[in-house]
Length: 352
Image (cartoon, rainbow, N blue to C red):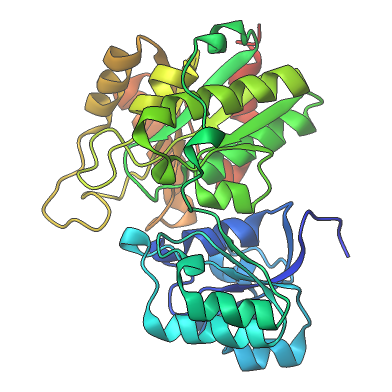
């Protein structure tokens, strides 16, 4: 058993695994220091290996058809909601599965906007069975939040932000891969999580941007970044992006650029994606235009493109990277498919 923060877990992602609405489960299947994932629940891919379904790389995490099948096969301490539907709403049928998990004595972790601890019956049931319910997206009390102070200017290590040309495009995954690539190279790197999944993956320095009161978003980004620098003294800090500058439903990145004050930006892009996630008819702004927008807003350079290979065959990836470099003049890497070494070399040259 690997050492984790919260122990063993089943990840619930029924009917959404390997779709854009399963990205929380995807993150936990790929990497987490908070849980030891013993299995995923998803009837569509039952009987398969989760890593193979997701990335064509078996990782020993089985997919079960149902909660009943899962608990027959494994004994887990935690039940983690791995769904990430638009708006963060929980279907009624899924709440029934959560009740089953509570009756089995499992602690519940959810990153949805449907706050489970507001359901008095669910809270009462959890108390009866000695379980906890953790709502990762529950807005913290105001007295726990930080206002922007300017102390970010003390942070003197290299800071990069991994932003994206759209939401649900792989920003967090690429950010983690960069962090792990730096560590593998013998350097110190810290991840600043800005969403619920990064917290679930064990990001030590985190804030949940879309559940934070607006006045304190900048301060929370600054505080997390400053704490990582103060406590870890890393060579590199990587700030996870949210949404995208021009996404109509999930505009994001402004606060990260303003408050995190990255030295450079790495931009995640899916070459085959033509429209904004979930919004047919809303054409994705061209990559060069998005780069210009980031550079105008922040005064900082986009120094590399990380590629999301959704909808692509393996032999299409390198030509797509080459086309991006030809179009933008920037190096392009698919760090998920090919590893982070090339991008790490680019970033190492910028270390302070």
